[in-house]
Image (tube, rainbow, N blue to C red; front, side, top):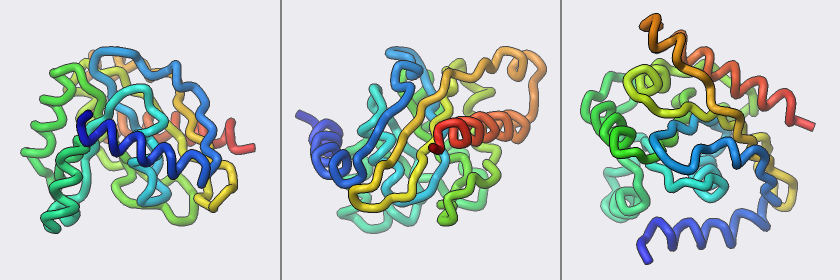
Length: 194
């Protein structure tokens, strides 16, 4: 059994009962082929929550600083995370993300780039749009509806894949595509909030 499976099993045992996680729309995640799961970001616990609620194994981008600790960095690499430099265009991370998608895997992104501690959904960075335009991946919006409070219900909602055909044909800007993705996440959040 690999470390990803062990980590997923351990996180499931801890997080499902702690946050009474409810999943909506899991069937919207394609069973195979490249997929980008784009979620809002409200807590440091978001990556494992998306990881355990998704039907796919996910490769996550994580801030470079986390990899500077050899123990944490070593674990992150074994659970399919790879570093990205924040605040600048990181060509290596972009290339690695595209390679993951070319191989038919799932890539997990938090387009806001940082946690929105007030629970609101912020503006997304252009990186999500870049990956969406430069790949043939299905784009699945995801809304995490908190807050994270012990034994209070946490909802994870996966929306239907966003049709990127028009954006790819028109060679839309990465920011325009990210804005569309964030709007889908906002709508999921609004509809499923109660």
